[in-house]
Length: 293
Length: 293
Image 1 (cartoon, helix red, strand yellow):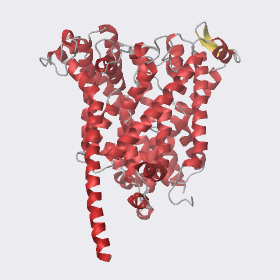
Image 2 (cartoon, one colour; image 1 turned 30 degrees about the vertical axis):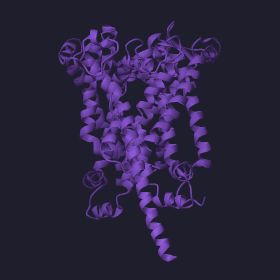
Image 3 (cartoon, chains in turn green, red; image 1 turned 45 degrees about the vertical axis):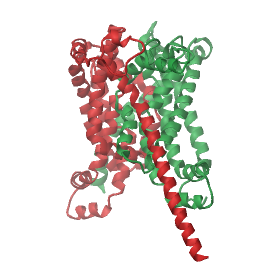
Image 4 (tube, chains in turn yellow, orange; image 1 turned 120 degrees about the vertical axis):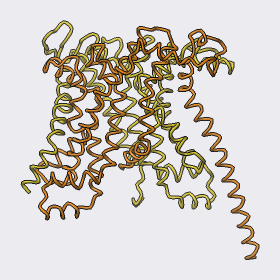
């Protein structure tokens, strides 16, 4: 028993160091630093009470927009990638030739380095010579400046996020393969059409997987920062200044460390609220097999 | 009556089979179209990398280059030292992946098998840390490394955290795997006088090799796509990774799109090669992470 617990502490030592120094201590410091002014104009931290937060909510020209943009982007990216990946997974779940090949095709974007992906898409979105405008003009639609137009930039970036969601497809596919075929057959005998079978058989059976993917997609997309870092620098205007990017800018470009921690805290609170809502509502729509439901 | 019914149902089966065949053919067609759409951006980047800039700005654009200018790649390498960037990237990724996989395995083993005081509390803290996004702790960690420990322009802040448990999710994944291994194996080894660490090395690790590969792959993808931390911690040009190099290249070249696309396509290669080699485990891994419910 003694040897066992000694071994346990040896095995867990690295994880404990990580939990303390990489997660919880920085998390606590983030919270504390939010009450300090540090960096620009204050070489040493100065306690300023709630001033950072007051400035955030009353005087910051970027902050409120950054919340809106973050939520708008996550909404588009999460719904888009959930629908896209479930649809593709359902197609791949049918008995078609070269399934492995198709799976690789849809998964491919996920293994490309993010920076290169966004650079490549910048060229596709290019206003005059890009592929998309060529297609649009071919369809008789006026050219769009995509990421250079504040009306379309978030939508354009969300489209890339959907394109990148190959991992969701694979998880959905795994889930679909576990849906018992007898349920579908039974529903069909009862005269259920394709949509009804999807609605009343596939969705309930897949609900734990849908929940998991929804959670993953939400957390990933709320943290969106790379497109702003790689492509848009938050622009045009503030139309792609996501919360994480705003935090980055304050912390590492204008050197306002305490203030950036204030943003980090609001971001953390927001993402927690969404997670909690998702968890709280999940009980009513998640169906576990073997439940007396 | 019986006879009639029989022939009717046989006909029914035949028509159902025909229906299914038609549906599968339709699925295949949709998959081909959607697959082509998903690959189109990648093709467009590749074809752009083989063109002269003049050809690139031609209208209407060509889907295939006139002459395949592979010399673009040689040209690009003069400004975009791909191999050095690749080596730098691997200098971060390889130790991180190894450290993360080993420490996650150790942690997972302790949580799955060993008895010690405070286990439940520690496990909750570990699972709870999954809900802390990396951006939230970025600023305090940056302060810790650069001001506290005075580590500047170094790979250490990018590598070291992975030697601290390799992430709660991976610990959790390993734990789930070890739980599927029959305990009798350990017990037999204990009777033979093996200690817990000896059991880990001689029994558990060989049995969960595939799970460890999965963890390594997940870590690889995560690091491969991490741009923000690299931007925060690395300053000098000779230490640049592929992602940082691309960003710098984009800034310095402006609108020389054919060279930019050549650099982009070069950066795609390691991920694609890695995916083709590890495809089997890759998909398995994603599937398993999706099945943790």
